[in-house]
Amino acid sequence: MKKRLIEIAVISNTHLGAESGQADALLAYLSSISPKILVLNGTVWETKTVIQKAFSSRHFGILKKLFAMSAAGTKIYYVCEYPDAVDRKFKEKAPGNIYVTANLILNLDGKKAWFTHGDFLDSPLFDAKWVQRLGTGGLRILAETIRYKNRVWNTVNRHATEVCRPPGSDRENRLKKGSGFSETIVKLAVGRGCDYLICGAPQDLCNLWLETRAGKCQYLSAGDWVENLTTLEYNFKRWKPYRYSEDKLSPFFADEDLKQMNVKDILAKNLKTGSALAG
Image 1: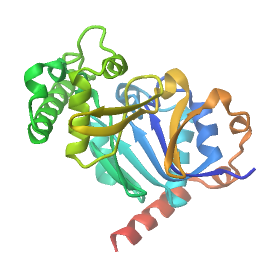
Image 2: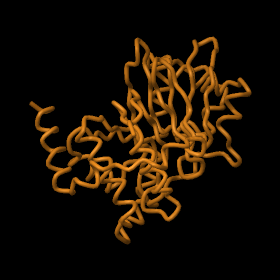
Image 3: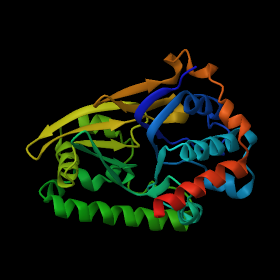
Image 4: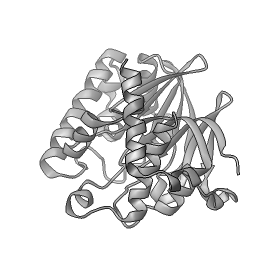
């Protein structure tokens, strides 16, 4: 079977290391596509699980697959909101075409796309009227301040903070209401010169056009992989949702190249690619 050739695939919150990680479906999906760029948004692996016990063979197979994709030329971006000790170690030694960042901006056919996990957007401050009167510069400073506060809290407590998340918060509903929150979102995107804002939340697939006095942007979410088995794909100048439950071919893909390649070969190819890029 031929793999589907796509420009960008976005997967949110794979939670490798957790029993609910949907590793088999993820491996089947990754084996069925050949993207130029793969964006892993949010929690890629469970830090506590990684520290306390080794990956299962199925979850290790995902990491092996990612390295193989990188060696084959796919650029892989890991967009993480709160990099902890494991993430920093990975960032320092990330081989080949694998990059770690808190924010990613890509040029797509003349338009700019901003990828972020976006947990800072759940702060109740973004609903405050005084915040809505801020300019783009002030909003960026506020967003970075909230992100830094959450990162410190996450480091101290060893888990993602919920302090800034209002009870019963639903970002998609807040956006659909067309409230000042939408104005804030558009200001943040327009302030970065972006036409697309791709976030790791909400948990369900989301595709909303937001137009306010500040401008307009397209707000997208790939949904939560563990909960919904969904992704976003960009091809032919447009974004499309992907649902694993509706894909009749993906479960039957067998990645023979991956089976024949051992870990040393994969790492050697990645490191060789990294050296070439550095040169």
